[in-house]
Length: 92
Image 1 (cartoon, rainbow, N blue to C red):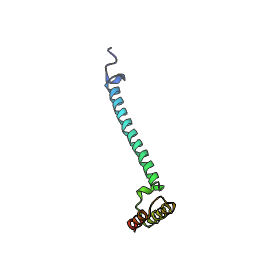
Image 2 (spheres, rainbow, N blue to C red):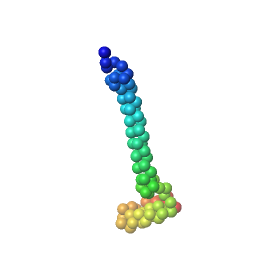
Image 3 (cartoon, helix red, strand yellow):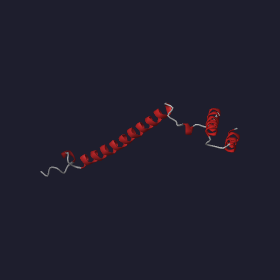
Image 4 (cartoon, rainbow, N blue to C red):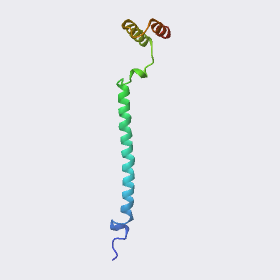
């Protein structure tokens, strides 16, 4: 006679509990999916060689390029002979 207050009525505590659990599961799985997508993007960028040249250590190729730039700057008059010699000495 007092319908609406029991567990079987569909409007009682069982519905609220199901709503909380469902919301919590949705939050957890949504977060996991978002984290997975971000990790996939990071992996894809790293695998495709998307590193900038600033991340790479300067090796022999970097020295050759730096010397070429120094020679060009010296030839165009941007730097003096002393500056050029200092650059060459630093790189060697």
